[in-house]
Length: 319
Image (cartoon, rainbow, N blue to C red; front, side):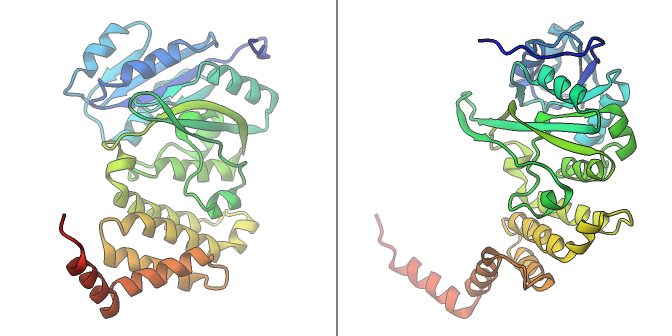
């Protein structure tokens, strides 16, 4: 049975922006997932950063179906900003080149935003898929509050390709920060959370491709440095809500821990120091998990820890 989606009489144009660079292996799937939507008023804008593989040949096949340009840019944030600036739609989407939409994503987002005029952004769940297309996880993020978003046990629970925004909300919050290349979405959700209501739809709107060569998979430590940059900038804002300001120490501790989780993968000493800072910022509210991490990483670098690891290596049987 096909669910009937209520639509306003004057259907708004939805602009989907995709940033692309050397994405010939998957960009066509993203294009086709937009073309397969059951909503009639969509423009798909692809901003390519000057790909050197076969991406441009794919884009040329879809001339007229997508609007695209290919030229050097300053990274993903710059490309998305260029696309949103060129877009004509009242509602804006962000579809990564290696992700795809579920078939009813756009119509459901328009329906919700039409029924909830106070909301400037709506997001939904995501299905993680492997390179063969098999679903390995369904992730439904929690409902949004700015304080809860900052304190949640998982960093940045909103999947960008399952987000739709009103243009006026983005205009009010501002475009992506060009200095950020890994947590620009997190920074944008924070700024939108200060100026508009953000609501969650209990549905799945996109599929996220898990691959080792993605930014998420291959440059985890650089995410950590971006987290630190966003933390300092955001907590200095004078317009923070009172509930966020009261929880500032706990928030700073949680974000330091998130940064340490990523930085420690490449810089043990720096990551260990950040875990310690996270604990000392708010020791009374620190979860047991953080206490265990600090204890483990200091034990690991102690004389006892090094001696134990050396003994294990010497006693390991040779196969």
